[in-house]
Length: 250
Image (tube, rainbow, N blue to C red; front, top):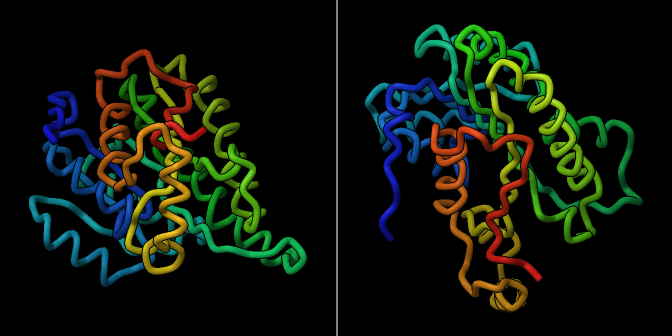
């Protein structure tokens, strides 16, 4: 396939959370390919350092546990000190670990919120002042089709992902006067290495493709391309919206 080039992304400082693997790594590669100044954070130091070395060209990696908000703020501060104030933030990091509602404890619930929701708010809080000063910016939060479909087996995850949409709309309203846009990208079942290792079987993928209007497995690159569009000037009047990349699930 032939994909677009976005001149407005060249030299823009971009921060991606959870960028060392899966969909996040594809985003980092995509932004680097547009000539952006990319910084990303992840808890996996080995994968993060390997990706930064692979891409070179000033792509910067900061290791941090996003559940530690002070560590997150410090990592974002170092990336902005090196690359300039972020013009784009992609809140990608999350983990869709399965769990039964009967087994959830208050501590587990709080940890799941910290892993899948809380860091998004504080990452936005960390980059918003620079975007306000610049009079522009794009924030992209990653949602999930899981709760739209009423999927069970991971209620803390689906609760967190449902809340992402409310957060997006609130920030779109609050930051809109500064010409800062905030949108949610909603992936379907994306064929990352983690998904393939843990949950993909011939039967499960066949069932998923039957539900999609487009019977094509969703690869990380397709999610990354939507994120590029929303980060670029081409989507200048798009904000407070959900952009689905799920093959048309019915």
